Length: 120
Image 1 (cartoon, rainbow, N blue to C red):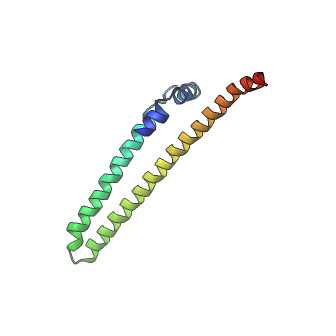
Image 2: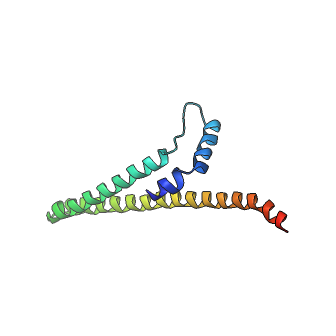
Image 3: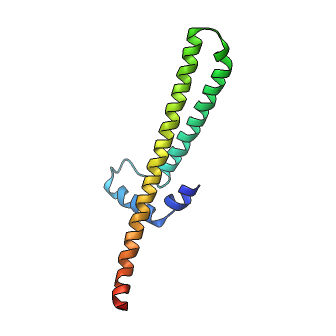
C-alpha cells in the first residue's frame, strides 16, 4: 500500500507512464498500476508456494523413501528461490521509487534555485 500511494499514485509517475506510452508500441499500452498488480500477484504466489513446501514437508516428508525426501527438498528449494526472486522484485520497485524521489528533489531544487538567486 505504501508503494501505491507514494509511487504509483503520484502525478510524477503517471506523467512518466504517459510519456512512455507515446514511445511504446501502440499495440502494447502501459498501465499505471500494471507493475504493482504483477508484484502483488508474484508475492501471493511466493507465499502459497512457501506454504505448499511446508505442507509437503509435514506430510510427504514423513515417508521413509529417497524420492519423498528429494521431492520435499526440491519443493523447499523452489520456495526459497521464489522468495528470493520476490525480494529482488521488491528491491527493484524500491530502487525505482528512490530514483523518482531523487528526480523530484532535483526538479524542486531547480525550481527553487531562481528564488535563491533573487534573494541574494
